[in-house]
Image (tube, rainbow, N blue to C red; front, side, top):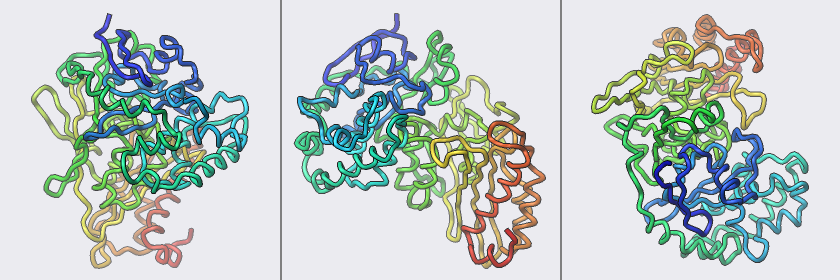
Length: 474
């Protein structure tokens, strides 16, 4: 018997003493018999199990999509969980009707996930556009129709739903009037306020076998172990100060999600292309749950955020009780899945120096699919040039070594030199001596070596297309 978990499921308050590492998917299907939420891949790839999670952002509730197959039930506590049944009214919503009109469904297995995801997009945002709406359903896969009819259905919804409809007054009221969400949504804020949050599971000192924040990889690899273990759930509240500036440092709470990072005004101010880079990291529901701390500690040689943070020369804060120590990210990886971290240390913060003027940052990734796939090779660069002389160069490479790699040799080769073809080519050749790719399902060692060379050239091409085209033989 575990301590009760209390939350709102659609319009009802529920309480359960199931293991907190049980998945939300299993609870809503097997215990609440809400079978509109489907079990497909159970890896967060198909989107058939998509739900909405509502929690407070200040005095308002913010909704995000999530894969219920990868969400521990304990993290539903004090939140509003919405399934497809919770979006149904006496008549079809605009979204549901649009799918019918455009033939956006055949067998229907995937359809609830699409409806939930698009409803979440309308709930999450005040300004709408087609590309963002399509991105919101990017984690939902349909095997029957192809996606053309679904895209038409999305376009129909947006064509009949202008942003000024919800930009004034209460958003819930506007969405209810337009038939997007049921009327009970108005009562959810007061219902959630009545639920008293328990805090025992949020203490870092609590002993446990597993510490779960996002769980987007942990539940894929070790779900059977989690359900038999003592778990500590890390809660990350909406609206918390997860990303802040201290002196010349950007500080990031390790519990911050990839979405938090991409949507941060601070990050967008200093890295104007970050939103585009972030879209290469999984689907929106995965980005809404995956944490930066989890991406780092997972130690995947092809981690997207790890690659970016290596190029930012990030430093990690590791906490053990009341003692905190720091280690640079480039020194954190000792070997394949081996970390400079004891089992009882917790990664609590990531920090890096804010970019100075004349600084260029870029991220590149190649995978078998452009989106929703892990990298064959990825790389990021931070380059600072003063008076045509390179004064700072941090370069990462993923997929070409047992660990996420910081290319220190390439860095040394570039520093103090003018930005020209000879310097770039020489530095890239040095980089290719630092790597040790292997042949696997994502490509041969020879292919990965060639791919890294080309991606490193792309960095410099984006920095100065004229320079690369005129001085380097591609």
